[in-house]
Image (cartoon, rainbow over all chains, first blue to last red; front, side):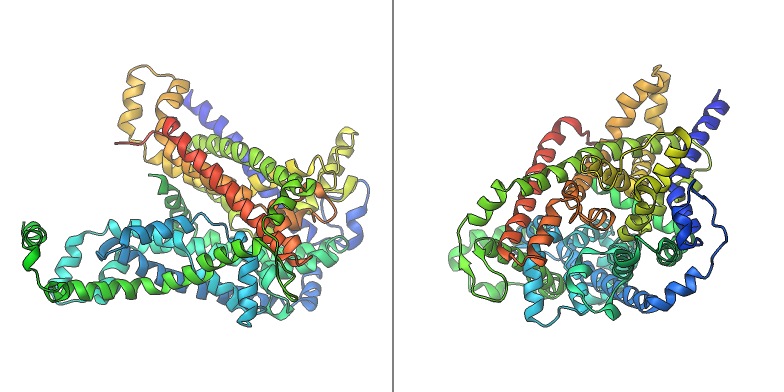
Length: 274
Length: 317
């Protein structure tokens, strides 16, 4: 009975998994096809002949390496700045009693509700005045303001035993030493969770780069793919698919390598309701 | 105990109390300085990049301005224009429709998958596979799905259906009636894994003693789900509903790259309007008004959910 149930569940889950995987498989198959192969009738599933040349061909046309570097360092700087500043603020809210702490935290909670899209026009005007439009700072600076991050890390810091802090204080540690040596090492899971969330958000971000960047050399990966796709996507299926594959597959491999940590971190992000 | 005497004693001695700073212990004054220091970077970023622009958006929404010439004060005209514009109404309805399909559809599917995964051995592989779209950028998701759904009758989906069954399905991304369901399907595909992982974590926190007790009391699988699993999972479900609704209201990336709403008004959403009016037509006032209406919609719907949760969500006391 239970064996039959297991088999049935596995069959259903495997079928679902196939649906989840199919778009990736189709992308890979298409990336080896020639331009004419897409309009054949009846449909050809497999490439014939296989055209691995699509990959070097599309690399000749777009600065993908550049986009990788851009996306990589923007995400890295954003993650580092967000983790540090939000952990600092979270520590102040969780452990330093000061007047106005409650209402100020309320402000943080309230601004969490404001979608970034709401402020896009004023943000654009402000950054234009600061001559930051068409620069990577336009992506990094606004992303650091992250009330959700403060909220999340405050939850983690509150779970750190106060006794640890007291012991350090008796040993003569100041607030900064306590924060750096006691608090941060003890909220490592929270930092991982937040780091992964912020990294993915930055890496995959499209709306802000679309509005703020104009120069192709500054483009992030999603913007580069979008630019190529909107010009040639309807014609050069093979090249477009090859470019998508080169943006997607490295991320998938990175995910597979770190899947245990990433999945556990993302799982705990959802327990905010408790 | 010493803390208690410290706070009550000065109150009794108020008339004779010397100036406060002299009385205040040194560590507390230092602490206040530390609090300011620790808060400063985030607070500054918050004020400059969130609160300030929000206020600026409100001001802009009462103006007519193209960013170059003079701004003129137009009062509530921008809001009036949006609310009486059938295209904006259509965009609101499209946005809501996407939410009405993706939130219940996506979450029920995620819940079913999580329940199935919870009862199965060797779930790691499935968890990983279902999560793959979550780490894929929305642009790549759109590009890939356009190859599947698009291309008229020659696309992989419609071509296969035609070859196998001899019927012609609608042109999903070009047909104004079918484009929203198509967007919803792609949205569900791309966020399913995250919700599955969150639900699985929620299921893992249900104490086995509880399910064991229910089993001993003779609860069948359906009763178990209704009376034990769902109530215990309800805070997690509530959290995912709130987050999913908010993100469905912000639908843009998938819509913009997958469909190109310039040519298909069935796919125009509120954020698309914000973008189009702001950065194509340079009506900064109109665009800000649309953005604020989006914020209002988000706040109202979230407030309603928080009200409703009292009846549906079960919190461990």
